[in-house]
Length: 149
Ligand SMILES: [Zn+2]
Image (cartoon, rainbow, N blue to C red):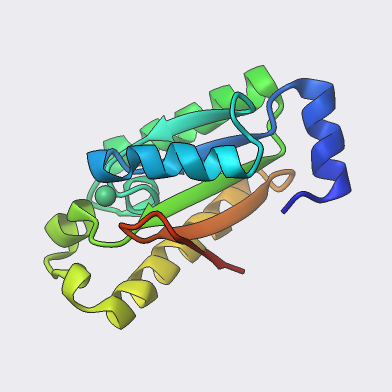
C-alpha cells in the first residue's frame, strides 16, 4: 500500500479507492479508524453489503452480486478509482447464515473460507476491471487487520 502511482492518482482524481465492507455494526468504528490510520479519510467511496466478499460473489445472492458490480462501475466512472479494498471480518453473520457453518468458532477454517471468497472476488474484479488494483483484508472483532496477498 502507499505506492507512488497510487498517491499520484489520488492527487489527480481526488478519490483513491472503493472500499467494500460488511454492514455489521460492531465493525463500523473499527473500519473508520482503520481507514483513517491509512490516511484515507475522505478519499474513498464505500459499498456496504452484508458479508462483503461473499455478497459480491456468492452464487445464491445474484441481486447482491449485481449491486456490487453496479456500484463498482459507478465509482469507477465517477471518481476514476485506482483500486478496490475488500475488507471482510471475522465472526461474520452472513458467512454463518449463507454457508451454514459457524466459522467464528473455527478461526483456521474461517481464515481459509475468507481467503477463498476474497481471492474469487479479486479474480472477478481483475477480469472485469484489469486497470484496478485489489487489496484483500480480514478484520478481527478487535479491529486488527490481516492482509491477504
Ligand atoms: Zn459481517
